[in-house]
Image (cartoon, rainbow, N blue to C red):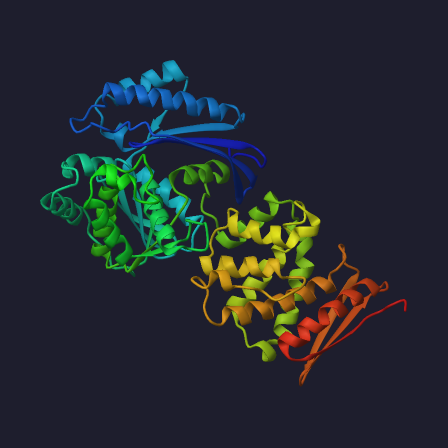
Length: 502
């Protein structure tokens, strides 16, 4: 039975490099919020070249699982899901370890097949990105999965033991590695995969992928703190792979952004990713901050239909629910914004993409109110920038944040985000903010007394007629407050009429 709204599910991922916990609380059938997360670098798969888990790895694993289980139970989850991946798949003594876990920790760990691991990672990515057709790379400590995605469906999985730990221990023996060792690892990647006939669109998930993205974000002086959705180029990955492989671990550890726990492995991960991009002729990859653990959470929450039908709609609803906004109550504002946008189309000449952003902003414009009413616009902008917001490019996140920030007054300032936005974005978001401000003025009260509205564009004049069974002095006052900005931005005159007391 799926996890009910407001209940929590805990997922423990027993990986070859780290053991990780995710505790997610279901907000609805289509959204969850992360309420706890933890990581322990157990290195369960370290020294496993002979097959067996080492005694040291077993002890580290037991300690990590005891910690994760204690943290998980503190949240009284409806379900605790513990899974193992490549290290446990390949270890002849995995059964002994699992029995020790059961006896000492009181936890049953299910070992996933390569396909099951890939499928869970796919669910985490497909429910949080725009990936429709292309490839998904999931790089862990033990295994590497390359998945083929068509029409958002998982079509093929190629899984090989070329994760960061195993790649380094098998091929990169010197520190720094010798050129022939690097060539051997690249050839192993080439032999392992057969590319499909899909567009070279590549998404990637896993801790090593996120660490590489963090380094690149620092070097770019990137204005957003988000890793999820960051696009990094093949040139950046290749340069970083060469740089990381050229120095020993101690020097690697001092490179800004390199996690101290990954300094001895990250060069192997970078080489593998670079070679996969070469095989696929992928000019770039998009980083996913979600993967296996989130995919297992979706399975627990959504049951037999784990794939979200609309990632953007689910993300908007989830962000609203997490911040005390009733999406249903915002729909009159959404409808008004759509009507104004359509009526004024000859004035602004914007298209369906901008219209969709406007309507999403209309749904989110009130999310900062519960934090501080008097600074609600700034809090709304921050929540869009930093919240669990999926299915949008970084550029779209910036534009949505600007819209909720400047919905009621002022002129949007995109100057800090010049590296992400394009030349027309400032003008476009300024137009959309003026439209959103007028829509919010029309629906100033909730529930709104406005029964219907009619818009007519005649030359450079937009006529707005409001019908209601009660006076609309409050609405007309707000419309008048928005009129100057609207007229200045859209270069038209605005005339509004409705029943009033005075």
